[in-house]
Every structure is written in C-alpha cells, then in structure tokens.
Length: 156
Image 1 (cartoon, rainbow, N blue to C red):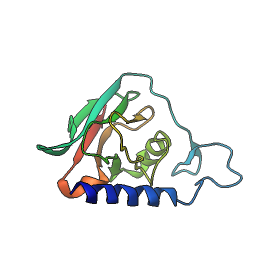
Image 2: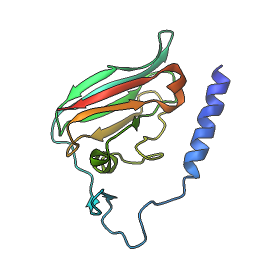
Image 3: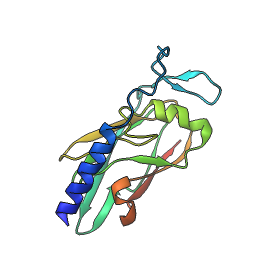
C-alpha cells in the first residue's frame, strides 16, 4: 500500500512540474490575480492570528485536525503535514466574489485554489484570509478525497 502512495505522490509531483509555467500574461506587472470586475487583486498579508491545522493519516483515518475552524477576517491558517503524506489543501465551491482574493492569497498553487503537495514531516502551507469575504470555505485533500478527507474554514 505504501508503494502505491509513493507512486501516486511521484505522479502528482510530475504533473505539477508540467504545469504550463507562469499564468500571468507577458504584459502583466501587477503580480495579482484578475478579479471578476477585471481589475487585479494582490495578495493580502495576514494581520491577525495564525491558526494551525494538522494533516493526518494513521490508524484513525485521513483527516484535518481540527476539521472545522472559525477564524476572523485577516487571520491565517498554517496547515502542517504530520503523517500519511502526501496531503494538500484544495478549496471547493468558492463563490465567484471570493475566488480572486482567496486565490491571490494562496502562494505556489498546484492548480486553481489548490496548494502544493506536502510530502515531508512538519512541512507546512500558510494562507492569509485577509480581504477574503466572510463565509464558509470547504476544502479537501485531493489524494485522500476517496477517504473523505474534508474540512472547512468559516471566516467571520
């Protein structure tokens, strides 16, 4: 079983490496993401608390701990790979009016609203929720979706 996981991780890493380069246009100097209104949105640094969410895979299953977390707008979340790698954070069903800022606040995305794969013990990924519209944001671990590894962030 461990061998299959390593093969899957290697395949995912290979797909990410073939990802098509820079998404910004050649003339884009803003470094941001396009907003629904057509303007650029830039990453907003966290101004509040950094909350930690552990990414686990063990005899109790694959899960985020805590599964659901409530934060204030301006806080950040730091996801930490503890066991059962590979893990990632992939937001699902994000409303159009919140998508641009959340995306701008997610560095090094593997794909749209999806973090890179975390493969090593204590490796982490941090996302600022500064400027992100209040609401509930659901996310999954792509490699462990079949194991129901899901969670949510509620931004107040």
